Length: 234
Image (tube, rainbow, N blue to C red; front, side, top):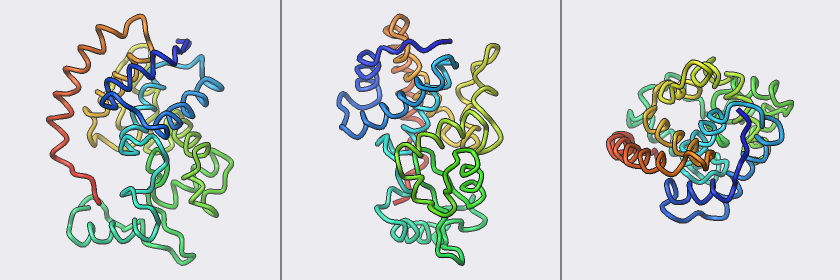
């Protein structure tokens, strides 16, 4: 499916449906960077993949559409402090090894980017995939161009969990919910599905109007039902 993108319609649609009627300049810049990278290299690929990529960035960056550190901290030191406090309080029960603690070289492998890249092994894997030495310079995952490459290539190739976009969105299957397994198991999977279907509708002006209204009703129900269960770590 070739993406013939009407960007004016796209931004109008997502502004109304996902950004409460207004967007900041950084949000526009972030989405534009993803759209530009996609059109440059993957314009012939499945439109739904782009929609799920955008939804992932929207969720993982707390809607900022800018590369962020885990916990949204302004520095590694502050992020580590927040994570340590949460871990000590038992609020990170799924964490077996505190990956954010600086290693012998003083590097912290906490989450960075448009999709939260954690653990040294994942920085190593994405270094090979992108050709950028993220082990030597992990903060490069905070650069927009690098962050976009990690986001897109990682989800296409299945670099994060072994699941890739084509596993869940293909000619015979459209599983928006289980597509969350590409990045993070089933964590907030329904919520991500709602976001992704709105992005997908925004990429298809001819079919979008009625679909957006239906998705908004369903998505708001899902988001309202799921949001209170998992407050963000601060």
